[in-house]
Image (cartoon, rainbow, N blue to C red; front, side, top):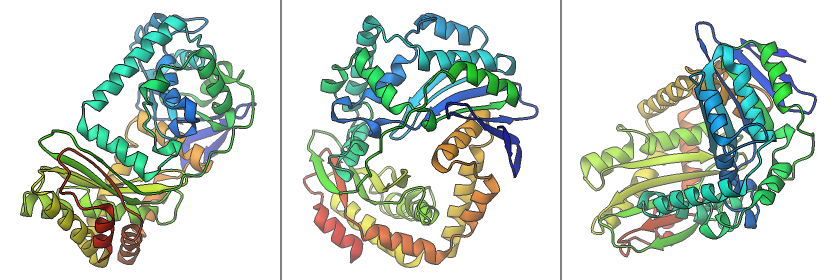
Length: 427
C-alpha cells in the first residue's frame, strides 16, 4: 500500500510483495529524475575470504547482463542523456542513474537488469580485477590513504568493519562468479533494499517499474551482522617521506545514539573549519601543519572519532601536545559562540544535501534502511537546535576518556606512544 509521509506530502512510500521498499518524491519544476537502489550491504558484511568482494560487485554490475552487454548498459543510459553510477561503503552499496523524467522507467529497467541478471563473464571479471588492483596500487602510493586504512584497521582490530573497502590483492584476485553470486544471494535481500526516485517522477509509475525490475527477487532472511567493537591500537609505518601523516582516534557513537549530534558538534568545534580551535592553534597561531581536522564517523552500531594532520618530524611532538591540550580545553569549556557556529554549519550541511534530487533520494533511502521511516528535515533541525553546551562538554569528555587509536606514516620516530597520548587527553 502506498502512503504519504505526513510532514512531507510529496514523499510517498510503498512496499513490493517481496519486501523491497519503494519511495518517491515529486519535485515541482525539476525536469530530470534521479533513481536508484540502496542495499544495506557493504564491506563489513564480508567474511574473511570475501575481503573486497562488495566493491568488486559494484564494479561488475556494469559489465554485462543476460540482455545487455557492458556497452549496451552505458548506451541505453547515455543515449538519452543520462548518467549511471554506483558506490560502495562500509555498510551500504548504491546503484543510481539520472535521466530526464520521461526516461525514469528505462533507468529502473537497467538498474534492475544489472542487479538481477548480471552474467559476471570470466573475461570481464579478470579485466575488472586488474582495474581494482591498479586502484589499490594508487592507494598504496598515497600516504594519506594508507594511514586512514591503517587507522580503521587499528580502531576495529580483527573485524570486517576495520578492513579497507578495496580489499587486498590476495583476496581480490581470488574471486569468481560463484563467489559474487553467493554473496549477493546471502546479503542482497529485499528487506535490505530501498528503491528511491525523486524529481520529475510519478509514484504509481515508479512503483510499477520497480515491480517489473526488482519484483522477481525472492524474499529471504539476511544473516545477523556481528556487532562492531572499538578496540583502539597503534600502527606506525616508517617511510621516507617529507612529512609525518598522523591520525589519532577515539571511540565515537552510532548514528542511533542519542548523543550523536552533540558528539558531532564537539568534532566540528574542535577541527571542523577555519574557525575551529585546532585550526586556530595549530595552523594560524603556531604554523605546525598546513591543515588539520577533526571528524566523527557514525555507523549503525558504533562510531569513530578522529583527528588528522601532517607535519614535519621536528614538529610532531609539539603538534601532539597542542592537539591533546586543545581537545581537553574544548571539552572543559566550549563557548556559546562555538556551539552556535557548529549548529549553523551542521544545519547548512544537512539542508544543502536536500537541494538536489540525488541528495533527496539518498536521504530517503538511508533513513528508511536505518529507521524504517523518513525523518522530516525540520525534526532533524530541531534535534540540532536542542543540543546544549553541557551536552557537548559531556560528549567531549566521554570521547577523550576512551581508548586511543594511533596510525602514522613517514618520519614518525618522535611521535609519542598511544599510552602517552591517551594520558595527555585525560590530564
